[in-house]
Length: 178
Image (cartoon, rainbow, N blue to C red; front, side, top):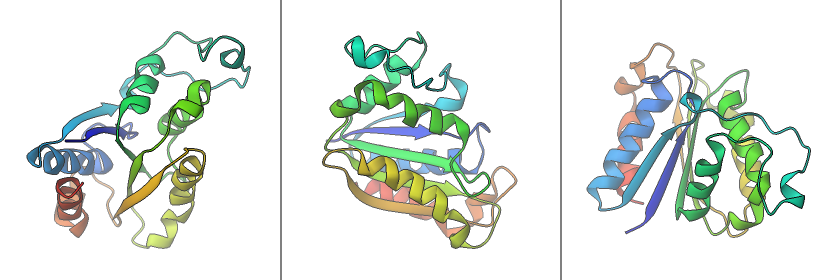
């Protein structure tokens, strides 16, 4: 059994990337894994100020918000799923804030299997290249990170549209096969 953490960056709860997170979660739970899904957009997480208070205070951030628990969950998981809608060819601000705030204890985030979920109104996967590069950039900073899978939810805008695409089944299968 693996400990899986899904970080849903979508500010639109029940939106397409959030739906794919739920499908991944369903597949992983049916395979006996312990899965936690966090909707980071619904949490109180300030953006990193780059003050490096954390560097001089044992990884403690100057902000006292939900990121303390999120960061501990990231450190403790075996599998990390990062999910974001594509906004102007990149990840959304809510998930970016989480990634940036891991700097407080970034050397403790290691040996993770990583999965990426992306959704976009655009029908071309090439419009997701920068989003994927953001995910991979973070993975490059995680010692022992291993990219395990990518889900491209293309051509979806209205909430629920992703249910009629191949990405819907891919998310379930990918979660099941963790």
